[in-house]
Image 1 (cartoon, one colour):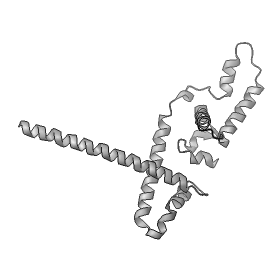
Image 2 (cartoon, rainbow, N blue to C red; image 1 turned 30 degrees about the vertical axis):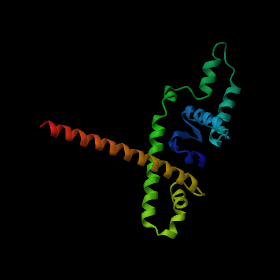
Image 3 (cartoon, one colour; image 1 turned 90 degrees about the vertical axis):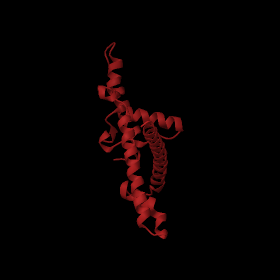
Image 4 (spheres, rainbow, N blue to C red; image 1 turned 30 degrees about the horizontal axis):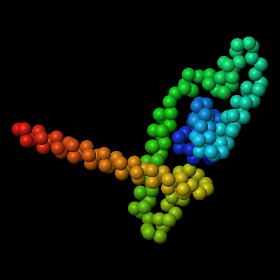
Length: 172
């Protein structure tokens, strides 16, 4: 399995079969992201495109059937292919929060001199070999922002709750 798939936290490994996505929308979403960011396509997307192109080039469709056959060759032969990506983002957020918790836990237990390798160590433990410290640090910082925003919302809710209780008490 490509490490690129494992590093893309919008996907889970069971979304793939033989190194290509079960849902072709995953590949097309990544193609769009790479195009907008002017980045190269990951190997798993190239593998999907290569296999799809072979299927398309082998087609010899009868009149009026080319569209359906090309759609099927691209993998769009199942209604589930058109589901939303809502679950992906939910998984992505969950993983980000797991990373956040692990970093915080390590920061509390390590001495000052040991803290420099936290992102590297967690990346190696959670993702695999290689240096994934930048990815872990990025996820940690995003999670910090999310936690801060959630805390601010919670303070506002608490304030409104207290204000509401004070109004109720004043009416009695």
